[in-house]
Image 1 (cartoon, rainbow, N blue to C red):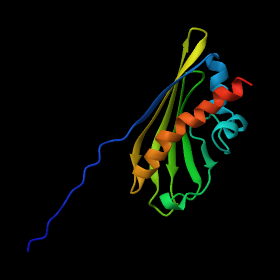
Image 2 (image 1 turned 135 degrees about the vertical axis):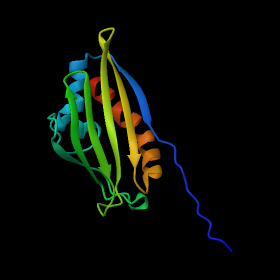
Image 3 (image 1 turned 135 degrees about the horizontal axis):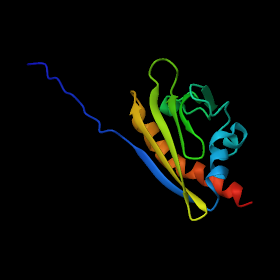
Length: 151
């Protein structure tokens, strides 16, 4: 019997969500770039809006997904009130981590803000479970910004 070589191709996965806020971009921007506000809607961390800044976010551990609760990030783009981009790496920290990139684009519209999230570039051994979790989780988390602003 001959050895059979099987190659699997997984299509690139992209998470994309559009949100609308009645608030101007400056207000929404603050929730994307202030560590104290990020902790209220996403998770605690030491984010600074400075290109090259490496930061860590802390989430609950999910051993079933091989996730130790740490997300290691690096700020790639900061264009105040319009664009923010950072790398996003999560996993057990043993070399089997999943890496990706989070992009935020803010557009002023009718006195408010359209916020586009594109989370892409998923690579790693276990990214499918994490991809599905993030695709469901982002709208819930970003929705909390609107709830906070409406208080």
